[in-house]
Length: 121
Image (cartoon, rainbow, N blue to C red):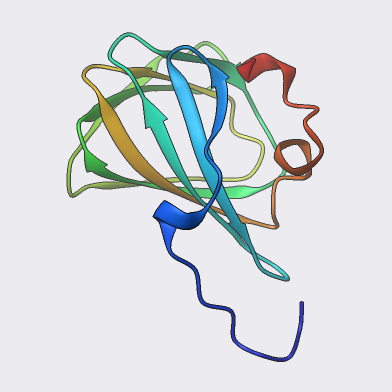
């Protein structure tokens, strides 16, 4: 990343439509990535895991997470709440209503950058 600060407006960034129920906008720094993720009610993010630490901050709506290998830990994350997902923890999510969340990853998600995130498409 450049040695200068970068300024972004979410509405100016391209919105990638991954499927009819899921879209996102990304900003990537040197060691972090932040994304606006747009989920329509009923959207399922299939079980996956990654070496990136993840913070999910729900701005609007509600997400139900199933965590762990067998998904036995269930956590509903509502507007104004944050879920911290450790590296390599299997997880899936379901949008209980139309939802906008902010996901922060360290390091950036290479599969999101290069389009190899087929599980979302």
